[in-house]
Image (cartoon, rainbow, N blue to C red; front, side):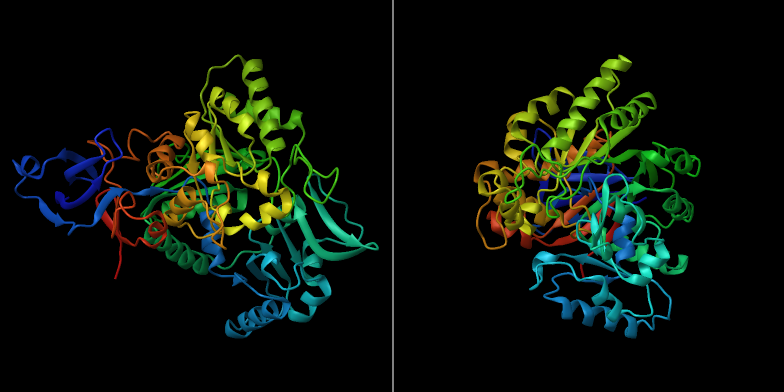
Length: 528
């Protein structure tokens, strides 16, 4: 591979010496960092890459998303920013006509958020039946934790008026009749059973989605929930050598035996850019849907704090499995009661097994983690991965659900920083786009959509926000020796930006453009 020498721009290393004059890359790795003239000595054959005043820094690392779901969303109806029920109807009818959807074929719609609708609620089953009278239709909330289905979908999924609620979920009924609304496990378990598009369609969508991630400056992405059916497709993707970015999967711990037997050669080591990184579990739901498990009441619902997805005993068993098998565990925790459950059961499991094994357990989302819980998080070596984008995208909903004071403490990043906790950021794509620069801006500005600041005392410096999606994310993956900073012998995973996020006004960060993304020395995205 040709040597490349990058120079004439701001080069942010994220090492002790924050800036460098030049970087020399060869065979996919960083060969040397230092002064341009010194690096050229003996390397006169290097290709000279003039940054022309732009900024070079470590590429972004996706700490949590559902990449395959993001790819699959390319084949679904987008309800992003729908304004009312009729808008939803028009989009779905247009999708059916445009794509010549045949009678009986499944239709799925995503990015639904009733908070943006004039009606401020979900459409009912009878309304959906009118939109798609000949097709099973299921609509997924942006959070991925609830949704609504029409009668044909309910029939295909085997859900009737007599179907009981599953553990950790609710099938909503009125006067004993189905409304179409499914919440938590009632939705999550059933949406997984919706037939997938053809392999050819999916692979085209995967290629497009991978290009999208690269366009955001990302070179490592995540599959946040690998179930048996998806395992077959991931094995196919890995063996087909279609990946140009690193892709790390986390296995549904309840299905681990079925999944891992299909992933031989990919467990904790890359095969054609894919590997299994650990296990995944769910402890609660979504704060927007008022299903995040809380220690205090939701505003306007005295005595209601939502509910846990599993018992303490079941969680302890799952943690013991992860510790015994030395597999990292990602636990979905939005509410502070769910976090408390995770902290307590992890401590009990470690003491019971008398182990010092460090699996770097992850608290995914950590939206409403209490500042009082952070010292214990640090003591146990847990890593909160904050969905800090909630401040901008759903800040007003948090204010409605919890009041201004409690909402101001969502994603308490400054307190975590002061505690010396390594934390990461994510976008949970396809919930929102995997836009790292927007996330960095939100963490530093903490502005809601109306421009109001939510939690000024939880703002963090831009540098700390950048570290959360680079060096800290590398640490989360046990890859701090090969990724996350610009240092000799690390992978040449780099991104070129048109401006330096450390030198522009905070509100300009979200407008910075990714000019080029480089994976192991090779350009995987270049702006046109």
